[in-house]
Each structure stands twice: as C-alpha cells, then as structure tokens.
Length: 269
Image (cartoon, rainbow, N blue to C red; front, side, top):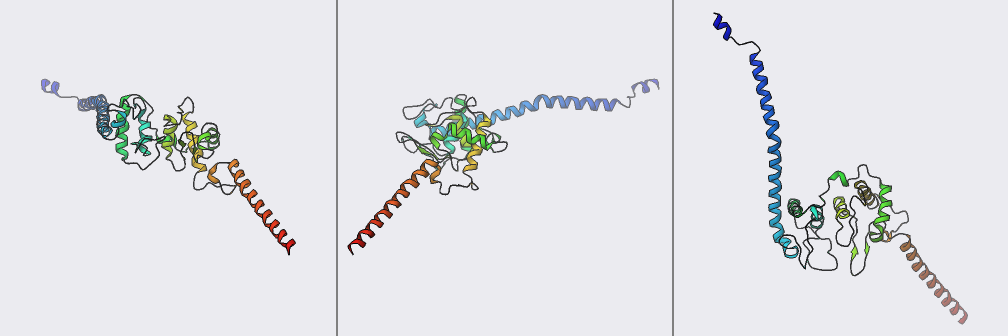
C-alpha cells in the first residue's frame, strides 16, 4: 500500500505539465514564426525582382543596357531607386516612344503589379529613393499656406504659380501639375526627373513636400475659384495685365478710327 501511494501523482502535476507544454510551444513559435515570415517576405521580394528583370529585358534593356548600366541611348539606372521607376513608368514616360528634347507623359502600358516588379529589380541594382507611403503625400496634417510659399520659392519659376506648366529652352518644358497623382508629384520632387532638380529631405523635408502637394491640390481642385475671372492659364497678373493692355488698346484704336471716319463723313456731307 505504501508503494502504491508513493507512485500516486500529485493533483497539480497535470497542470504543471500543461503549463510547461504551453511555454515550450510558445517559445518555439516565437523562435521560428518571425523567421518564417521574414523568409516568406524575402521569397516574395526575390520573385518580384526575378519577374522585374524579365520585364526590364523586354521593355528597357535596349536603351538602358541589360544590367541597367546605361548606353548611348539611355542613362544608367544604378542607384536611381524604386521611386524613379514608379514615376517614369507610372506616368507613361517610360518606355519612351522616340528620342527627343523631352519625353512627354502618355498612357501607361504596365499594370501596377508589373511596375512594382520593375521597381524592385531596378532597386536591387543600387540603393536609391523608395516608393513613398500614402501618409507621406496625402493632405492630412498639411499646411496649404506654407506649401504655397514653398512652391513659389522653389517651383514657380518653371511650373508657374499654380502648376500650369511653362516653356523652357531648347524645346523642353515644365509639364502641368494639374491632375497628376500626388504620389507622382512626391516622387518627382524626390528623384528630379529629366530637367527638374531633385529635392531630397535635406532641401525639402517630407512635411514640406506634403505641404506643396496639398497646395497644388487646393489651387487646382474642382472647388478652387479664380477671383480675377478668366485665369489665362494661371500665369498671374503679368499675363492678365498684358491681355487687358492689348485688347484694351485695340478697342481704343478701333473706337478712334470709327470716330474719325464718322467725323470725316459728316464734314464731307
């Protein structure tokens, strides 16, 4: 009887065993689950790069080289980053239809997934600006007044005061910013496409870029109004004054000729 009672388990033994099992299971999950997730992310990224390389070989390598090193027909893409690819391909500028002073915006021929794959491949060639998150370019927390001040200081010389665009030298031009996706405006400031200088965070902070995008959305939105009436492309008071001067002076000359003709006719009669 003493031997049987000695082998009898304590009532809490099962509970202790259960707790130990849960602890071991939790430890194993904590040890291996993050690794599995990271491995899955790496696999997805590798797959995107692989598919992007295929797309690059078909649509981009003829100008930029098979490894993105650049040729006489296109610049190197090493180090331009995913943001440059997302902007150029997302706005239809790339692939370019033909060489010229400036590549214009046109209809995009790639899907969003394909653009992401191309961006992943080019990003793998060298570190560069990444595609911005939505929180970086939406209007939440933006200062429209500050954005207008920054835009007039840094951008209006080419894009004019409300982003309507303007002519540059040698057949080049600053495109209109009306109707452009805020993400693409942010990427353009970050990467400096074609004739535009780049404005990294050292020149314009992320908040500054957000303010500028909010300003452009305000002045070019459906609810914006022109208190001066006809805005004449948003070129400002100089163009409006010139318009008034030319047509006003023309009207005065026409009236003067009419009065003179009537006076001469009256004298003859």
